[in-house]
Length: 496
Image 1: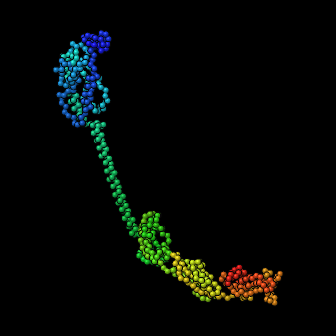
Image 2 (image 1 turned 30 degrees about the vertical axis):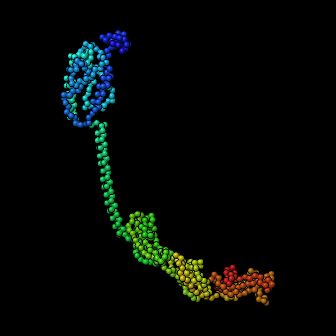
């Protein structure tokens, strides 16, 4: 044979190479055997059946011991012995003539450790290799199958009794356990949701009952609480009109006039009568939809309401009236003019027709001395104008001083102001002026200025005795004799 260590040709009876000392009959390559056996054992261990009730164990079955036997012992080997074909290149160290079986311990194949709970019901197998089929095989070697079978039977009987005594347990990591846990969680979630829905329905029902009861109470309050008004539903009224609202109890009233329901934010708070005039009537008539709500004081709870629809028509503007009739009067008097409420009065006191551009009436008018015509009109807030009302007044007041007394007052004033030398006239009836020239006096009659009657006296200045260089006008109050300066404005006199 050839030494695998140095390649030397050695005798087949040699155990070790005489040249290099290498063993000539080496132990078989157990890696191959270990791999084959490891695969079979792993398949057996990992191939777990679905979880079910433990089946009855046949006591005749025994756990096989992995045993390699020789040809001589093949016929006597037990039925559970694994037979491995002999490898032609397998060399077993030992004496070929020896019949003593050679027991070889094969190291276990490394693998991930299984959870202990998954190995409780499994069969533990010791990988023991009895090498009988070798040059050292002993045909008379003892057989271990009987002891092994008895031991396996005892283990199975013991585990069977333990399974019956203990409740069935499932692997929490298995798919069935996870599915069962998910199912329990889903049922629990459904139960919680159902309880929440039932609670919500009960709460909603209770709240509904409370609101319904409260609503009925509020309706009862609304029915018993009234808002009073001076207009009736379906009535017809003429402008101007004032609508009043009043509650039976102390409350706040909000109203609208367009038919919409008032609110605390959008309604108009009632504080004084609602006024309507001709200006509010567009056309011949106006339909008013008045809706008023009453609210509790300092609260937003509605306690009453009023709904009224009425018609408002435009009325003709009433002409103004005078409190003094036309005629003669002998003492100072004042004339009062009246018209419908909401109207504006305009008047004239010279006989002309009044308009909105005439004098606006603000109070009693003083009667003018003399014969005058007082005229007036009324204009409402829509611009409608009434007919003209006129009266003729002749105020006759006896003068307290005469014209001669009035003339004497003017001459004395001219002397004091050194406009004439004295109150004596020359042969022509003129008054001499200091420094030269003369002044003549002309009676200008009477004039009423600011409702005061004056004697009008005209004074002309003549520098050469014939040509008028300047003219002045003086008025003397016929009641007091007071002298004032006047100016000529057309045919009238005004204060100068």
